[in-house]
Length: 147
Image (cartoon, rainbow, N blue to C red; front, side, top):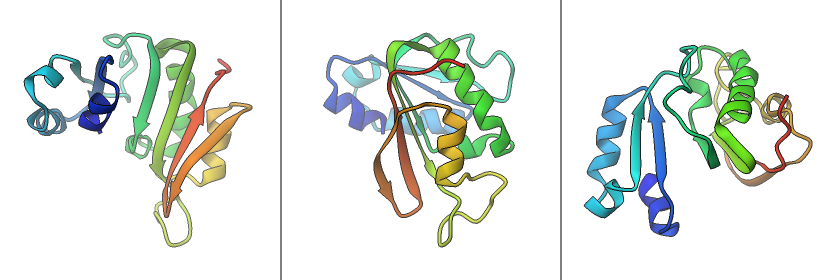
């Protein structure tokens, strides 16, 4: 995903946050030097209370198949509140892509949320769903309401 975004947004700078050094290493291996200079790789654990300390405020934030990494889907509402109150600039875009708990999709209802559960925990009046493929869905929020 990093390479895809860097190629399509040549003036952008990208921060990637993950708890896995191996994921960062894999991502770095796919980039050329000029792309690597536009990426900050940040190791961290969103389950820790200080996980936002080394991050900035962003104009666009994409959560890509990560919510199910929380210990339980019940943590998602607080996760979104933290993102909206600490990490997003005024007028920012917030995109959340994750697998759905649904028939013929992900079967663990403790980790994966239904489409409605995602909509409920984002706590936004206007949420677009620009893409839904089988069990994968993108939720797009603008005009963010900080609660």
